[in-house]
Image 1 (tube, rainbow, N blue to C red):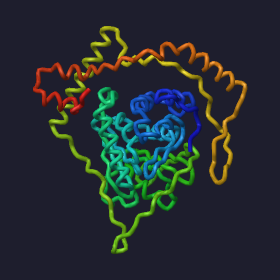
Image 2: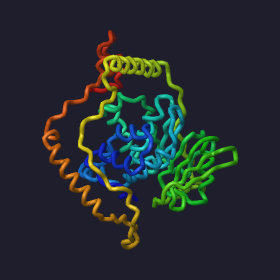
Image 3: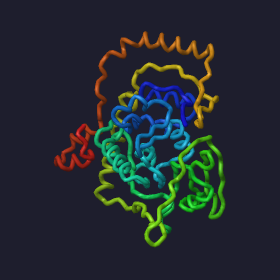
Image 4: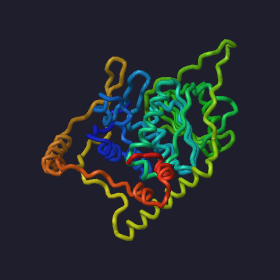
Length: 357
């Protein structure tokens, strides 16, 4: 699935296109998408495809199309402090975006069938924490991933406020998924080629809404052990944060609030968007054709599309001079404040999550 919006040149361009096509509709979701560069989750040599609205798969590593993730994030209606379970957590791309919204007092768990993909997700998560400029701009709920089949979750596992399943769910397993959800919670999963939002309104009552026509690979059926029964999989514990961790959260929050107040007093915008050229994009593609047994999006050419291309070319020529200017590295004000504190270097390193920049 995918191909519903024009390809972008970079992550921000892709998000602009998703916004214009109404896949991204809320500021909270937009900020999360802009903070996590989709290209960082691609293998070297494949990044050229990162900003196309297409799914990508290499071996066991898989990313859904950006338009799918957009609809999922919007349908989950995420709020700070909620618990989230990602069934088929893959590269961790979605779980990391979710963590930016949940904040430090949420719960962010993922279960993934393939151990090599879990290791890949952990590497990408560590890289985000250590290297991303976005990490210090948000309060983050770090995802915890386990290896296992999501159809083998232990029966005594805790329930969650929000759940997403990234594989096709058969009707036989629908109730199994619902049991993992708290009353008042939201479950988003593909059922019979429809991305579906399910809200648990009571102990035994539900409300369902179809979101989008999709095509997902089905859930892998669990294998049985020597006793003829599948082994159960334990989810990560819902651990209480220790005092040292809480102190780090509140010190960073206090400094971040101080920086924001300081900038506001000086009349400096807190998050000034970078100046960058903006392309006009085509709207959603709603025509598809069958090639073999695959459904392929078919763009509709029109005079308006040709006019857009001409306008884009003029904008590119106009902004060429600015584009050639070297960009200054972003200033990390939070890190600067921490490094000026009268504290031992080891404590400063802890407060910065041992980041080097």
